[in-house]
Length: 503
Image (cartoon, rainbow, N blue to C red; front, side, top):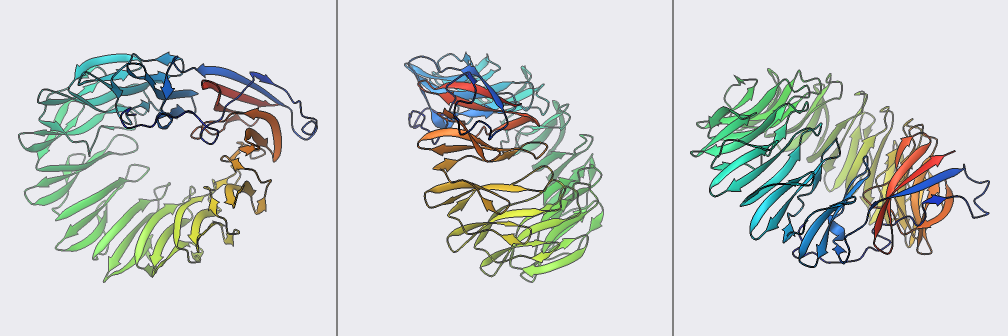
């Protein structure tokens, strides 16, 4: 969110759309009898300050808590609005500084006035500093921390308390909260050494400290440290053997295992606890399954890559892509480059060749696999072993919660439509992302026709027109029979929380 260099624009239908009535019933005869009865309400949640222009690229939403935030230009500067709260006017707002907390409806951002910076947390200003860095909330939203600079001193403000001043704070490592939100770690610079700080206490000082991570249960801490010319992995205070290099620390989901990639005398290999796997010219992708019982990695030997799953070697290829276990841990999939072609490799073997593969995901029960691929200037969705028709564009596919159905948006020429399973639905000027209900019985998505926006419910139109829904705030089902989204209406724009009940 930085006002300097931003283009001032009014909202247009392809950016966001909004609701025009607070209470809506069916009025279109064609719709009556074709749909379940829908009861809709719209609550105003934000109106921009008078005589201001919103920077469209600044909009941030907290979909779960129905919050919308944005930066607007006022007569004498810039200000932030969060729902119906509006900040004082500042000279500018820190670029991309606005953040919502994961829980508790909290927010923070940085602002600039007369060359000084301030952190604004939940609407309250901190002291003024020479610089304010990234604002980070703990996972439970109860704590907040940020890096500040005053004169030559750098320190961390944690829950309004200033930590020890240092020569610098390393932004690459950043501020790291443990999953249980009880611990905060960061790396500082003091007297030309890196210092690892945990909850305000200095744990270690060395030439280099990298990749500080907590285990999922928050009971373990691991990081890489350099002592002299050697690198060591430190796990709960215990030091590994010396390596020429160490990277890619990862804990297993059950927190029992720690894996990483290391190098000695020019040979790279993967370590998983005390077990050292075969070495090669390069290693990559150490990955645990969700149940922590399976392990995979990639290894390059003599210029040829292979992926090992449970110590079983797969096909050879030229370059690895991304590896993924299914949610039930029974299946796996990964992308590889072989020659000039990308392939999907899974338990069923190697898939067809494409120019690129950009996304893949398993269904909830792990029984199905879908991915998006590109070949000969056309896009495809591959589901299990079925390849869709070629399209000019396809959106990311989504599975229903029962794993029985798949849906994705597609575009062919000037027509946009949703494809469910293998069936193309009604074509429109434009569409939004499809969403399944928790019980997999309902499918909704926004659609645009004749420059009007409305939503499709179970493949039938609900003919009440909107100016739009926020693109980054698609519909969310609150239950099997109810969903909500964030919308706006013109002029304004005035933002609304739109709630729909399926009767």
